[in-house]
Image (cartoon, rainbow, N blue to C red; front, side):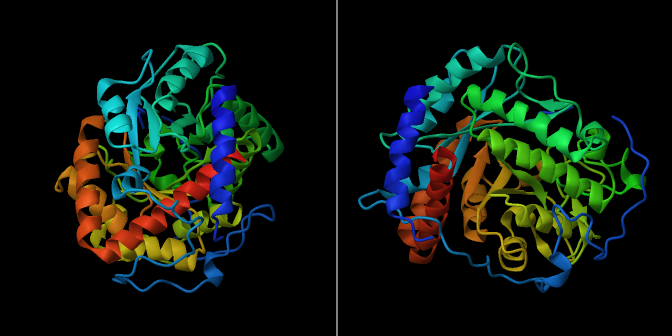
Length: 409
């Protein structure tokens, strides 16, 4: 991967010069059920401060404000810009990227690739697969290479060179120093394979009483225990280890999936009537932001106490809560919007446009890469017709390029 790292360093210099600033498929833990009201700080190492921030009013239609990380290079076409906002999936167990993924990377200049599914092929084969993708990237702009390596049921990459990572409920029982150390090792394995971005850890706060009934998280033991303290300590320790290895973690699924019973991957119309702007579920993410998270993934559920009219993925109010109340100025990304049942009422193009319009920076199309051309075309059409949306695209591209520069540097 030496050639790729040199390319990354080259684009880092260019971007920084312009800077303005489950594939898863159980267990329970015995712990007190957290109240969905602000509480005391769970730890001195990563202290949530959401309770001290103002609450975003429900129904706010502003996507929030924060400074973009970098200026878009002069001369970039609209097509190249919107390509940077898309992440396309490709099977993790293949020798090379799929034909649909190749089309997205070559014809639509897509800026990121996600290895999905399950692979037992090990580090060396994964590195070759990654190279088949990065070789297709536009000159001077490296790909963001991502996968899902939480541990337990959600671990895409296995085989020689990859550790078997335990589920989060087990990780949560370790001392922080051990979890940081282990996560640093897991991250180093990913980095060796060419992975930049790990769509983990889960920061969803699942009450103990909901553990087995919580289909997306608790049922698969993806949560770091059942208290604000344990979730913050575990998720920030995992994140610290990843960052120390050179891999960026993505905390998810804001503002939290701990109070739902259905999985948005397979069920439409999932609604949370519990979590509000000042809930402990939000406070957990505030702690993740304070601890240095640079990427946050949104949930596909509707949160009636934040925005009763839109799923989080398409909600300016939810993004505003993250940006304005929690002070997050990094990259906001969607969960998969190519095949999730929760977004099936919109066309692929509408999903991409509505997410970016709401303040999202990266749109993930992992399960079905064939929808990416429609997404890219819709983003281009809207940007060419709407100057305000074109500015929103530039803002998002700036954040993505700045994040790529940080990863490279």
